[in-house]
Image (cartoon, rainbow, N blue to C red; front, side, top):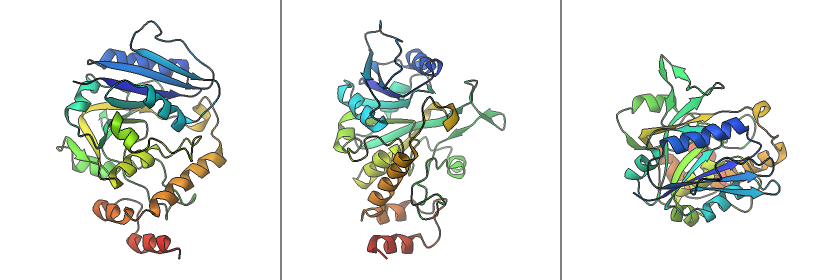
Length: 288
């Protein structure tokens, strides 16, 4: 097994959430690994300074999640990067299981679960709720503008394909992904044209990876869970103008890419996309 670098970008995170995230990693990772936390401005916290495989980057002011992650990836020493939000938990042996079924040009998400405010796993029909597939939301049908809406939890596909443990998915959730470090930099990491933008992680990595010949996959042999935080629960305020810029930049960049039509043809039908999606894309690309 190869070394895994867990990279965690934290901005205004509640101390107890970050502590739970770190505790979960150290309790459940079983191979060679390191944890690197990037504090996107103050406040900073001392958590695991006594551990040899724990590092911190303390930015003096906010640089944005994309710049933060690029820096974390640059200092990582593992063959693989495992990005997690600073409010997640992980399954046992996740660092080893994720690399047992992977190719160098894949970006992979584990099975996705949801953490509630009390840090328990959200339930559905008496069992832990999970999602294995995510779809790319249609920018033409979003009432809030021309954008790839965040989310895209694909319940129907998840229920239909339970028996396929390693499978392709059109998209991932931005809170957790696993990739070969060299591949991350082959993709260019996150773009300098959007250094402060918080949104659209899956677009710049998962979609770009597929357009460049790689695959976006889900590994259902393990899982991670994410605490969703509405704006009033975050430790900072989102800049709406910057967020809108990030959404528009991603949607215009990839919808103008000539490789998007073959990719869409492969993945259709997807929720939120109308029957005349091809006509809409061609009209958009032609400027009409």
